[in-house]
Image 1 (spheres, one colour):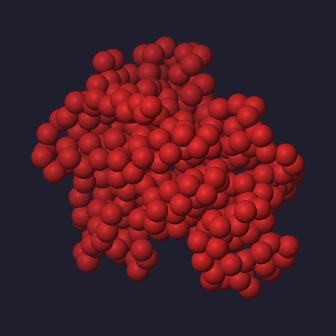
Image 2 (cartoon, one colour):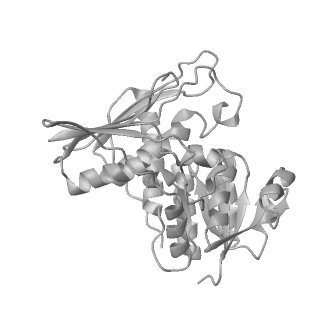
Image 3 (cartoon, helix red, strand yellow):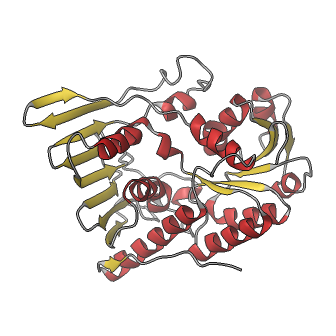
Length: 352
């Protein structure tokens, strides 16, 4: 069991490392941000002056003083870096998507279990306020059973951007960028579907990767549609949940990301008020009423992770969940390629 704060090393200080990880490692007493692998040494140390900065990920992984390695490198680097970190006896947190192939995730899961180390994937959207509100509506069932759910992550980005996520390669494109958020929420909410049907497209002129998708998850008594378009110029309807007794709709994103991008610390008592609030509406036969969700708190993810590392609880995302997500991504690509509805049948292999 780790004694004292969990000494953490962060690989990468781009958007993910700077916005979604470093602020929480720094904010929680259970962690310490000891080292960062980045070429932006001045930028890192201007924010975290006591943090060591190294140029290469290998130097970070080889640091015997670190307990946890957080990996926010480009997607195709996740597997070799996580493999090296686990083999070095470290706990590992992977930015989503965890890896680019299901077999890689299965291998890492087996390595983590053999080594007795925590391996987890950063599915922070489980702690969005809108998703937590939806979970409550389903579990407490004031509107009855959920029958049809639309969950979207739309943007207005009609022009391709010059960034690695939009370059050809394993794990690139919007489906592997935003799909893991939407799929993980659906599987966490409803479990495994019976089948799925996917459509993945490249719609923007000059785009080199998938930039539009719709994925339908077929359950015995519910239909789920997940999607993203780069052509949403108006308000984004994040959720449209239709129940037997009414419906709930929510527009906009949980304000945490916008607040974090504006450098608002999670420890700020007003956090995340620098982000735009969401709007929610509940509709029944009795009429409409406001039902705006309370913002979530990504600190809860890291708190659960600390409990897992110190032997006091389960990881916030299980290895089974991580593998099921990769299976769904790959199965959806196969469905889109074949133009067919495919059964969803997966069970993580057991390893002796």
